[in-house]
Amino acid sequence: MFARICQTGAKCGQNGLFLVQARANDKREAKSFQVRVVEFREGGELFLAHAVQSGAGLFARRFSGERASHGGSTRQIGMSADQSEMLPPARERDCVAKRAMKVIQVRERSSCPGHFSNPGRVFEGRSDHANKFLAGEGIDLLQRKSGFVHRCCRFITPGMAAGKLIHQHYGKARVRLLKVFRHTDRHDIKEVDVSVQLEGDFAAAYIDADNRLVVPTDTMKNSVQVLAHEHLSAQLERFGVTVAQHFLKKYSQVNRASVTVAEPEWRRLNVDGRPHEHSFVSSNNGRRFTHVVASPKSVRVESGIEDLAVLKSTGSGFADFARDEFTTLAETGDRILATRLRAMWVFEQAPADYTQANESILAAMLKVFAVNYSPSVQATLYQMAEAALAVVPEISQVTLSMPNLHCLLANLKPFGRDNRNELFVPTEEPHGIIEATVARKNP
Image (cartoon, rainbow, N blue to C red; front, side, top):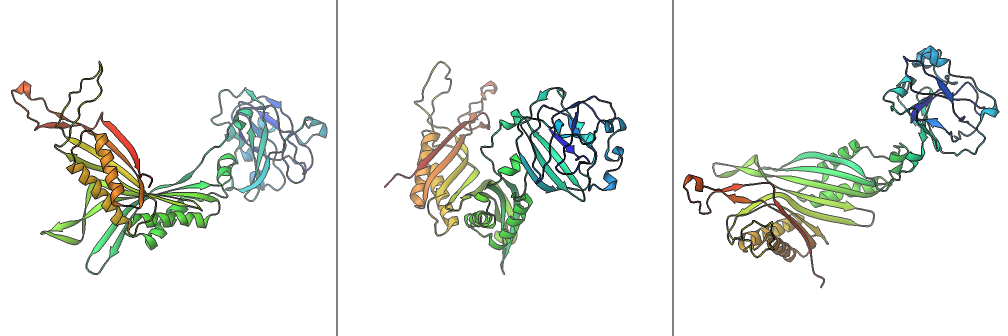
């Protein structure tokens, strides 16, 4: 439960009584009831309050140091006259709860002027179960300064205290950039889509709403732009490593940085049979990517290609498969094999040229797809992975995903036509999905 607390006129170290107003707003009267006292002591210690009511707000008169425009009458801070009658002056020490209280946390924050200036807003969107009592386990005091001080109180109930943050990361996604490489006789271009994810000492932002260690995602975007201007080249992998290491070196609270860089393919446009020097056409088939995970002790580089549509009109079959009472599929030794390939490989060592290594891997896999007879997608996938491992010794494993995009023979018999494996209906769903990871054998 969140509320605004304005300290009573009592000085620090004196006791003050706070009341909880339940199920009320600026326009309605409401009954009040007393809760245990929150006692402020020298040094700003904050102690536990018990028997707080869910969905209610805490109010008291303005405290010393608050500007007149925000103080004075209770109406000036959005409280009705009948609400102002609820607010008592400081009481004697016998009002303080006698049972042991628990120190939670006190810290200072900056806030926009006028923020929380209307206490009646506490009741907006309140729960319909505002009468339900919850035993508070702690109060988190946030001191806000913007010409005057706000003390924002967060009650920690038993249900809230049951939560435990076990993992967190955050970052910036879809940072799209297009870089033009201007040569004397031609232009080259490279378009990239960059995503950054950081892990580290950010738990306070989730648990305590403490942003002091949070790197803004807008800063991540700006950093990627500057680094792309200075370092983006033909090899995505080296740029990804540069970005990841930038955040590790720049911010001590970061212990792991993950960077994904994807590249849509542009091909030079042919004009009168010759490649044009500064015009390009999108291939719209396949997108290369790299994924870098860096920590202070290691860097892992994965590269690959996704959404690459490939098809062979023959040289594929499927037979001798398991059958039961629900099987209707007929065996075949001649069918269309179509897929939308996603392949990723892990570099155990950095090759001399990442771009050349990636091209060699893709060429080796596509050669297997085209030339080898395919008794199943599973067999073809495994053979393609073996070919990739054989051609580039710096990679340690390959992961392939090959959905089986069925091309169904069109039925022309109702029209008196004989369809001899010539006309098919391509389908996207439902489709088979075949995936596997193949690692290099130990020497």
